[in-house]
Length: 325
Ligand code: TRP
Picture 1 (tube, rainbow, N blue to C red):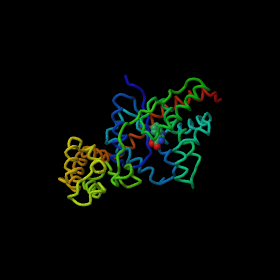
Picture 2: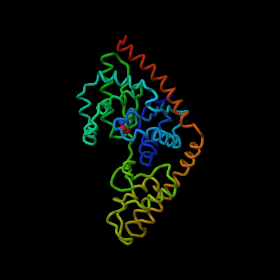
Picture 3: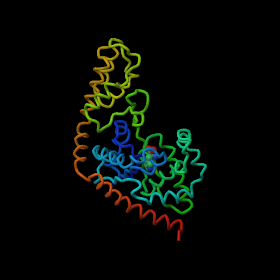
């Protein structure tokens, strides 16, 4: 017996990086053992920022290929693209009728977006959490693995569900967040969270050479100017990445860095080697899957078909509960 149904969505950001892997994908893969899982690439949500729409297809393909190579298994989970199951947009509209506008205007992510794109404060941006709620409840998911930044959205989702159930009778389970307790992965600039838009990432699918080149150019401990200066691993970006890829030698690296027994170049070389070793099986599998022509499209078509079957049932039930003629 499975413990429940998981739903999670991620925007189509294209090739995934080690921050995506350590923070989310790895956890998605693990949840497949105990839960009935549905993972979705949310292309409609991506439209709220209207960037690079011509890249949506390629980004969706690259992202799904990475998910599959990392261990998301279409035999175990439903893997699909949000827009392939248009019922979500119907449910979004119906849920919007029980969602007070005040709730949405108070959401911090909305206020941040208004600041970030004052030229494009569109209606979809306000409705973002309603669409996210529709994603989750269309499949009657009870468990939603997300990062902390998504907690306000989940809170709204629960409020919408409560309101809907109150008005029209028990229909949806209240979705619970399942926090991915993972430390933030810093980017190669040593300042910000790893992210593609900041170009401070290490892509899972990059070649070993490219990975090494990027790591060798990474920012390190700012106080360590010369090879013989003592280092400060606690503030060093490269050291923080060693946590994930060289965990057995962490103390040794810290000691040698503090005593200036190893320099940053050596330390980075070791990191690059370990990351490349850890990612080798992923890269091999990705290359194999990329060779199989049409494979990703088949996975997505099958995922959409299975998601659609569940979505149809929910929509029929919802229309009935509301009393639509
Ligand atoms: N809002 C999420 C993000 O920006 C993406 C998302 C859309 C999502 N629908 C979802 C996450 C449903 C979990 C469940 O990361």
